[in-house]
Image 1 (tube, rainbow, N blue to C red):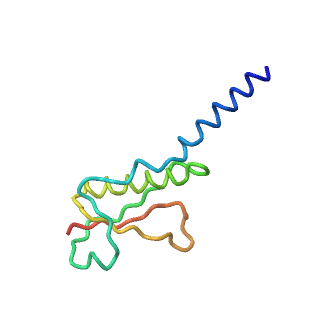
Image 2: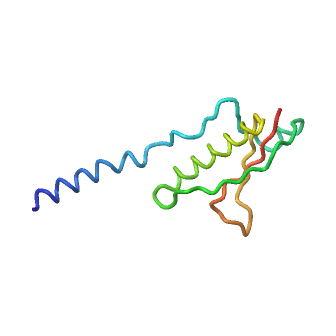
Image 3: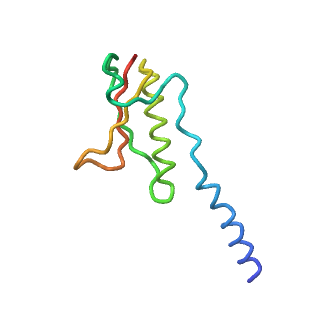
Length: 103
């Protein structure tokens, strides 16, 4: 019994690093991130908001996937640049907001 518990603990501990590796999400072909001042001459396309589906230990992965979803929605709407916004006072701090532009 003790051996099986030790083996189970070892397996669980070895699985943890796979959950904390850098995100594979983030790059969408044809869509770049920019600062607000860099899009002054661009055409507005849409405001996009996504709520991550993972929290706690997986919060960073959930936010990375939400940013990826924003970029995909922007590309599908005809945009090629997104400007991510910081959380707004009083709003849900987990929301990922961006404005999409065509430059």
